[in-house]
Image (cartoon, rainbow, N blue to C red; front, side, top):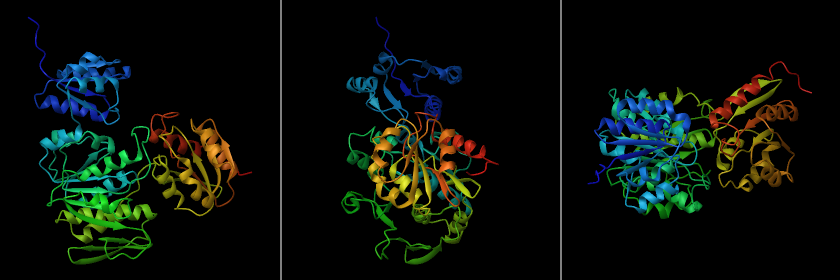
Length: 456
């Protein structure tokens, strides 16, 4: 008689989220198998093997997928993967980090999504809550998997979670007490069949909320009114459309944000915030303040203290150095066109822009207006070099570079006194680097290597 195989959870991908998920499920008494096609994950596999978790490294076995009880793919694994599609056709269940976390979590959750600004807003909310005497766990797509808090609670009293569209795509039960949608612009079109599908993924953050929950949403998002008609929770809004609005809970102006919440009015000056410059960061602040106020416990003055103590995150409009009156900024996290537009808005018409990398269905034409207004020259890098050249050569000089060192040196040579050399590539980094952080570090290293150089 053939031995019956007990259903197991198959964790697909052994990055940080996959490893944490495998350990967590095993700690709950589940049968767990983990697989990763990357042979370099052998040492991680050994760590899991010691616990009693079976691993398959360097290959994917379709039988392992088809015999599983539940698939748990890491966010970076597309659901169009042939083995996943076949297993689902065989009736294997599918779940992800958000739903598994939701099943065991008992704490209030603030969840943040959007195309840009997620990590800044997530970190900012954490700082505001800490300044208010609370002990938040800050994690999710920001770096630390959510299930880590379930294994090591450390007196946490609130969860602040950055949530990606990939995580939302396989979520059916996740319900944040406060959900934030910062913005939606073209991104990840290599993973979605259309821009509309990507939009729907972002809006799905609110699909399980009830009237006791809160949705904090950017009022200027296209389709706002129609989408809000399907939301059951209380909706709070913020806007920076340049008009004085009486229908928003946070009216964002050039030098201040005016908050209306539960009959109280507050004004937050923002022109002195060196770490949170730009209209996009004023939106991040507005969303963060409204979310913190929704918890009830934080006091407004403590929220502002947390905001003022905030330190800018690496590779997000991060100042690197000024060399011979030419300033260098690392915005390597600017991996889509909307992020680049927001970066360009922080400067005048004196920018040398390093642009390019691996495209994600990128429409560079969305940058034409802002490049024409602010950019003196483009240094194009990566797989998209030719596309960049074809798009922009009629409106400004486009100079190709094969390496980051060459890009930085050509940017420096193209600049004059007072100019800014800005790395904001509008593309993924995987054609030349391990990730956006690796790209940013290489940019900074090459900038620092210019120290002592004189400008021609």
